[in-house]
Image (cartoon, rainbow, N blue to C red; front, side):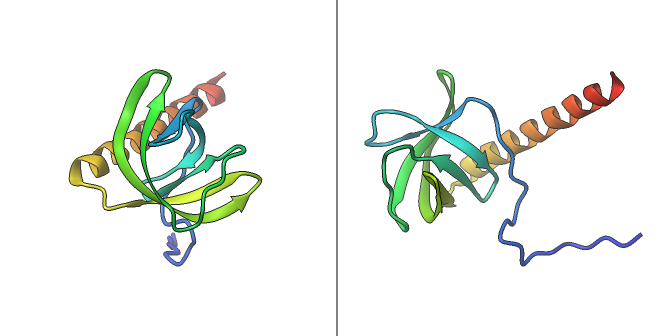
Length: 121
């Protein structure tokens, strides 16, 4: 069995999505919908607001009223188009890295369980 890994891929980590996950950005009144996220970065829908490439933002991940991760620094690296902004995390501390890893892993586990259930029915 041959297994290969392409590390030159633009996406260096598994991206996932979580319905209802939002990004609260410091200085902006309304939360923004997170399209997908990984341990390296995220994409969010900016709606009618505009963000500049290289702009740094302080954000919180929220799900409903629950704060999942707070005080993250992100940098806009790409205007994907149609209001989507691509971002990377900047200078995460060890606690933030661990929480982000755990969040991605939990979403992956749920996806696997749902696929197994769907396949069993």
